[in-house]
Length: 306
Image 1 (cartoon, rainbow, N blue to C red):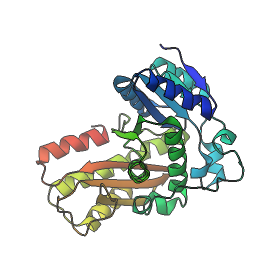
Image 2 (cartoon, rainbow, N blue to C red; image 1 turned 135 degrees about the vertical axis):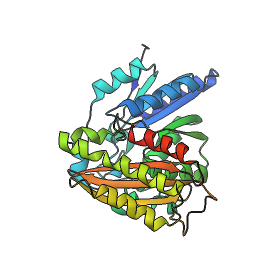
Image 3 (spheres, rainbow, N blue to C red; image 1 turned 90 degrees about the vertical axis):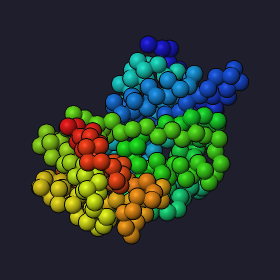
């Protein structure tokens, strides 16, 4: 257990990180929207292993919600979140109100960060404006925090690509650290949205990780047509009537563009998204060309929880 300082003002948070660096301490930032689960815990633990001071930001960012209902339903569990941060040894929680981050709210800020190709397509198509909201709030957090390491989960892979691009393009003195997806026993990626699923929907949602593992095995077995890989994921998802596929694709891991052909010259990523009982779920997994079959099956087992 650690002494945990809970800060609500931008200026106080800025001064806290500045003072820590002046003392020669390394600082780590874990940006979250709260409702912390084991996936977030893995980020906080990683930051604690690598940094002298860990700050967790908890802010439900209205700019990244296109649907006001979705914003209203997003779980807010600050008391629980503070206990998690305290147990894991975080030193600071930055939990600002909306007006602290956006002083003119409910008027949105006049300046918005818009990222290019990495934010288009996939979640960018199904949730217009979402990544502008993500990039804007993360840019503001980075500007407040200053030089630090910032920890993000690979579960939100497109978000991670957007943050990497924004950080490089705007020259923030921040090292973005990608951390592996944490999964439940049946392979479902941990998400704050999972609590909104009924028991039957929760069972059906595991089909996303099964679709990813089937696609990974297909590529390792010689499938080189991106369209065929997407069709395979769609066919697997279609076995669950409670799940409606949004997209399933294999993409270049850096640009998120679909290659004309899978050739193994660049790292690839499988992306999938679906609606389950009105809840939007996303997942992803790495895929490698030319891996031996047993190696890919081991990877597939990790994705599906097998």
